[in-house]
Image (cartoon, helix red, strand yellow):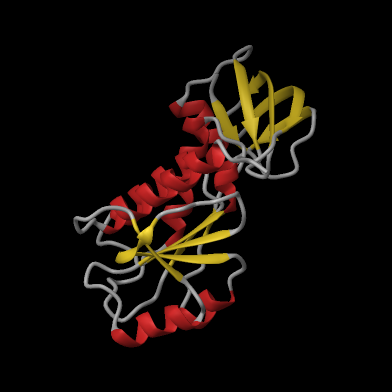
Length: 229
């Protein structure tokens, strides 16, 4: 069943979709009257219904049922990452959305690449939500600096080859921090220690930014699935 993303809150009844989602349903999915359809609002509600009208500028859907879904433990994860080059950041956003993380924030640091635009990343996250039939859309951005990072709620985990073995523990607000390919500067490392943050390693070899971020999110998500409070 195809999924479209609509503004929250989602409620049963007749809904008129316009703009990008109507265009996507009409021209990409080629929906027709009578086709079954799933709608999600990105805030935890999802419903099923059918298309009742297809017009040039709108798509009208009869939504029969709406369910309030529980977030996966992975939604407790905030991934703060020094953005990799080019399209690798949007690829990372897509995959982290598939895993169900709660937020993805680019990190401004001395050795980082040019900070990415967030509009495209937000569109990619929406596409991934629809493809994976998720109900929660992660927060994308804003760009954070080290003082902002220090103020984020939850325990802070820095991925570092010199750290301890990963031990996700019980589910709780957690910030996973992935540095640039050139590594953090001495001052940045000291700032991370002062926040405080814990250094954790995933593997012996040097990992690319997106590999480290995805691996860490998967390790925490999988561990928490079997260790719910």
